[in-house]
Length: 208
Image (spheres, rainbow, N blue to C red):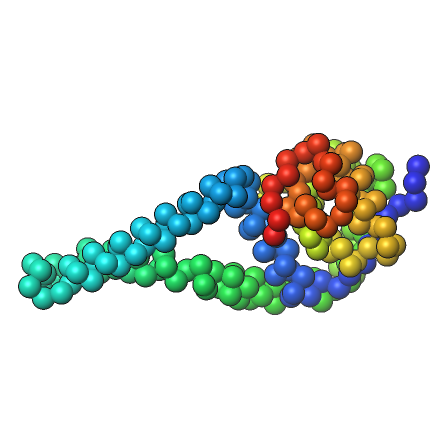
């Protein structure tokens, strides 16, 4: 048995925001694996938003059949949806960041030090408030991103280990090898981070 892999980091707001960003991106990529298809969907949604805005504005111009405000409500809704569709991509990350940080400030474990000890058999995570140990068989999915790993013990709960947290220089590579061998659902989001990623016999999704 190899020596256990150890990792240690401070759980601050930036770590939680990054973990949330990786989780949201993994969900989008898994929903639409093809990069070109995602691009086409994005273009279509923006085109649809522009159409909504166009027809909403045209319908509200005097002389086009809309006279009373109460009759214009459906067009106002269409106009609002169009504007929201067009501007949401520019505010999505900032909005999610604000919501994540707002929730993080209420957590009792905020700003605590998280310590991991990972062996061939199980994973152990410990902080000043709690500790937990679980076997690899309980891990449903591992997401491998350019700057860290998300370890899912169910569909909604994930543990975050940033690459900089590993004590040894080869800690991230060792964890990748071990997780590949123990978890069937291993998702790679960044193909260029380490040479091992290029020969993964798993689903190569995309780069972040």
